[in-house]
Amino acid sequence: MTNPEWITEPLAPPSYLNNGYGWRSWFLTTDHKRIALLYLISITGFFFLGGFFAMMIRLELLTPQPDLLQSDTYNRFFTMHGVIMVWFFLIPSIPTVLGNFLVPMMVGAKDLAFPRLNLLSWYLFMIGGILAFSSIVIGGVDTGWTFYTPYSTTYSNTHVLWMALGIFIAGFSSIITGLNFIITIHTMRAPGLTWFRLPLFLWSTYSTSLILVLATPVLAITLVLMGLERAFGIGIFDPALGGDPLLFQHLFWFYSHPAVYIMILPGLGVESELISTFSRRNVFGYRYVAMASVAIAVFSFLVWGHHLFVAGQSVYIALAFSFLSYLIAIPSAIKIFNWMATLYGGSISFETPMLYALFFIGLFTIGGLTGLFLAALGIDVHVTDTYFVVAHFHYIMVGGMVVAYLGGMHYWWPKISGRMYPERFGQVSAFLIFIGFNLTFFPQFILGYLGMPRRYHAYAEGFQTLNVMSTAGASILAVGYVLPLFYLAWSFFRGPLAPTNPWGATGLEWKTASPPPTENFEETPVVTEETYRFPVREEMLV
Image (cartoon, rainbow, N blue to C red; front, side, top):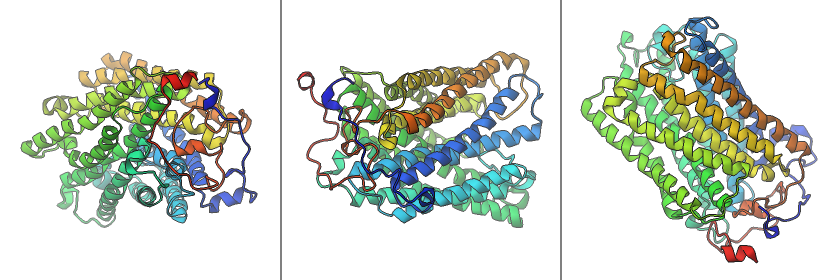
């Protein structure tokens, strides 16, 4: 960005980062920006903890025989990787960090509707995380992150109840956060900020919050029932006790498939912001993109049964779930089409956030298209519980959500920290992540199609070459993830001061100082124009 009208001089306003009360004040703060940073530190720690388990898994899979980890240890490691990444990174990351920081500023408010509940949500998240971590310290869990019965009841002699309790408590954190966002967006919008002037990030956050509030209690009830069965021998899910294992799968996936969209919907909102800003164009079909977020949230509750195609459910209901699984792809396809239309003819610049945005489109599209394979009954029977599913899931979650999260962090980092990061390091990191990710997970599509089952630490020798490629890619991916940890931390203290609006972006959050003052705005802003109104080319040349 070179037009001087887009950049204002760096300022040094009273900052939320230092209010004069010392570090202890952070643990009693009700400032949404500080709570966002508390979440940022917490989930970053969980991310690298989960990454450690992933690294050990990939090192074990370098060779066909189990020569690094024993069977029980391997089972614990892939369980801990899944549990930590899903419930303590993927689900909370964008809502609790970027959402907490941005939602009040994007609606023109001083804070969220319930600041004290916002702080409580972080404490609940940390209590849940500590309980989950304690299960690692005292022996781990070997059930897989899905806790399928009878692994979580009869066969497992590990600390399942500790882990379930941690996830149960963290679920309340999610519910409080979602409720806070819904009420804030409904009741605290600035004058003139109508529903169809909201940034698309807010539409995605609102839709995500609806899922959090409506779906998370189902997981909580499921974990309570599982705990009662394990602790007291009450027959609910375990067939050995007269229970129904399919009931557990229905309840678990009724939450967990909407949870997939809890993870990815905020990333879709970030993507809209990045595409618009760095192509200097209004989002094509704004209302369709906004309504697509709501449609995804609604349809997410109707497709859980495609996880049970080989579990024994009726073939007729399986056909219905197959049809609905194809149907939910339509709102995502609308978003992809509209982003491409926004890019077409735009004045595109390739700063680090835009690189992540473009990589997101490619990786998320591959993940979405391979999801249609799994929605087809005949193909799903062949690739169920193979590495094809692992690759598909990671193309959506890592190639989609994590890439969007990193794009959003780089985009809003000047606003969060008041500092600019080194652009070249950001670009190198983005390319390393893109290359490393594809080298890690694309071979797994082939492995799965050839029949390599997931969750095993030993495999046929013919699969070794592809596994070596996957582990090599994971090494590159790890370097790409570690780099931002260092240069963003450096820039937080030593980076050059950031202008108020370094990208020439639209949105209320760019109309306050970098970093924002404690109450965000000196006076309540008034919105008088549409979202994403960028100057036309003739105006840009003046």
